[in-house]
Image: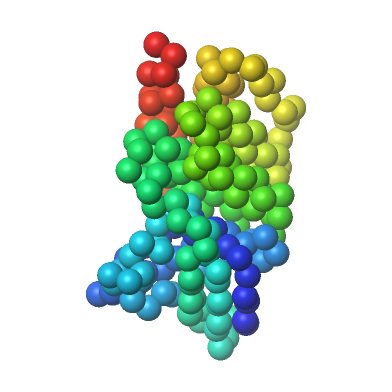
Length: 200
């Protein structure tokens, strides 16, 4: 296997002394995983931040071997991780994606929507500029994985958008994350609590 493609880094887990196992979302190949040598080193640490857009080269000699991944930074979302609300939003969007999507199955619309959501979080002056995009992305994940329904009724005001965010909590927990061992929903709860403080 040899893949060269733009990708969104959505998870990074330590492996051995200096390496990481990275999970990345690509438009044409879906969710892929790879071994990044030196991923925790000084040079690569800023690259291995969830939410970053990277240029990915993935190689493996056999279908049973974890591919080796080479990643080069294209756009950093690292500075956003110092802002609590933006960091909570990126953490949740990436965790949802990494936990729910099957590997090696393309979801081009989800790739495009996640990239647009991350751009909105980075470019908006406040959460008012991206809460609706977060709700639409969550609803799209539900639909793409077969638990769809009507598109959320989005209100123009922030309070209405946060209410739409609240309403998706139950179906996401019930359908997408019911069998997960780790408490991924904790990231969504943390984001929700920060959003609610904005309208109190």
